Image 1: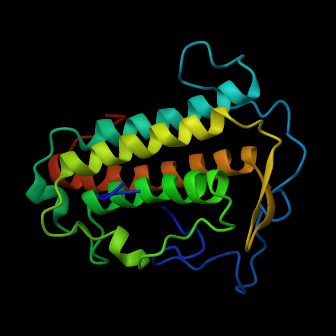
Image 2 (image 1 turned 45 degrees about the vertical axis):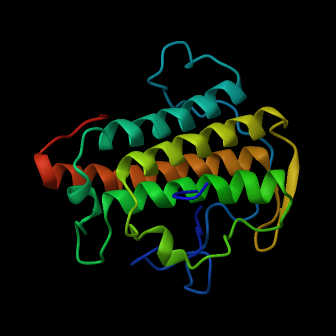
Length: 205
């Protein structure tokens, strides 16, 4: 994976991290190996998933967000997606590139390789910055490959299987999938806003 694969959820641009010393309790603290909750009552937009088992439901929600990322950026010109859309420098291509590395970090590095961390060896800022020669087609293709690899890894594990994370401690595959839903949806929201600023397009794709 050369153009894209990860996320460091502990370093969110422009937003104080609720997990590290800012006096706000993290609602996720201690749920890395918590019992599953029943009756959450969140309707799934995908047909037949509303009454599916937990694994099917979680994977469907994550795949829905992944698919929306790809749909939102389809057909956009490279010059447009490379350009910063806000003062922080965030670009559409940079967000998709970062999401590919998010997948790589959590599923390939942490789960498959047992590295103890989701952090990648390069500077995190590089993930958000389109590099000379990188194209949106290559970036989306790399994101698709990263997602496919993540699905493959998840199929080899039960949701209750655990891995040790150097900062979060023992976490389940369930916890990681839920975090990835959170992370992907968050950056999809960023992409939504940037695309709307470009051409007024809203919605899921």
